[in-house]
Image (cartoon, rainbow, N blue to C red; front, side, top):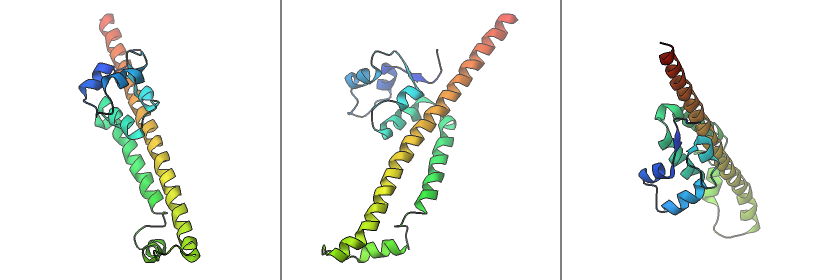
Length: 159
């Protein structure tokens, strides 16, 4: 299919990606495909931030912005449950810990470290969900544009 929101290797190189993505690497990621759409980009085995960089350039802002608002809203909801939120007793305990690695210090730090690890895991998960959500919105918009293009062409033929 010839969807509107797809990109070629040449198209990526025109966007001037960082040094981590020379033409040879982009060609390798495309693996012989002429074009890749949003879901193909979301599936690339590269860091999520790099996939978002390309997805954000693939479609207009109004297409992918709802996914970003959703991700921000979820992050705010989740961060309100985090133990290091300003003013929480956990943040105060972390600041007041002695630098000596005593058993008491280790016991006090363990719940904080667990919470931090859980928050980091959630952040990585949220980023992956955001990539998938952005890709889905772009694919949906691409399908809608293709439908409109074909409908306009069919209407023109009927006239």
